[in-house]
Image (cartoon, rainbow, N blue to C red; front, top):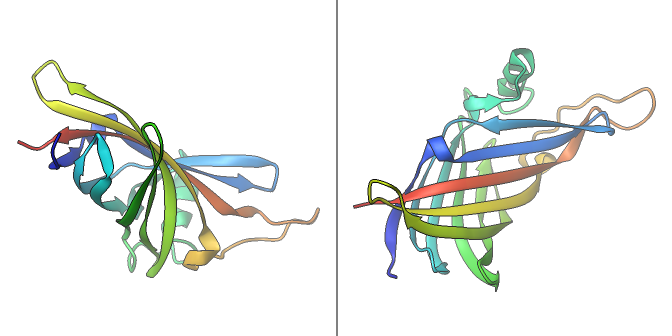
Amino acid sequence: MTVSNWTIDPTHSSIEFSVKHMMIAKVKGSFNKFSANISADPLDLTTAEIDFDVDVASIDTRNADRDNHLRSADFFHVEHNPTLTFKSSKIVKTDEDEYDVTGNVTLNGITKEETFAITFEGQGKDPWGNEKAGFSGKGKIKRSDYGLTYNAALETGGVLIGDQITLTLDIEAAKEA
């Protein structure tokens, strides 16, 4: 294969997250609006270039009050920082169809280098002849690294919201003509 441009199919893709709540459970949610510019040979992702944009206001935890609080200045302050971005800088093959993708994450006006474990799930043509490729990934970031420090102490000890966020990606991309 050769390097080509790929576009995310948002109807067959997702970005989900989870965070500890009250130190005993996990709250899960998703970002419903995102896009990416991907230049890649799916059979050799080490040469790929990935620019990912997430509309932070599209956060969805299935609770409108919580979602509005997350959009506020206590957390994402979406009026001033509407987008989470990722730009790849290094991709290392770690196993068959497995890669560590490192790049700069910018969130809440702060940029840090992060690494995500990505799996190439396969490639094929849909019923209309369009070339598709699938990827899944997982990574963890600390929200405090991005100035997201809102919290509340619990009377039993500990805090209301954990610092570590687990991100899970499932992406179906279409090869551009």
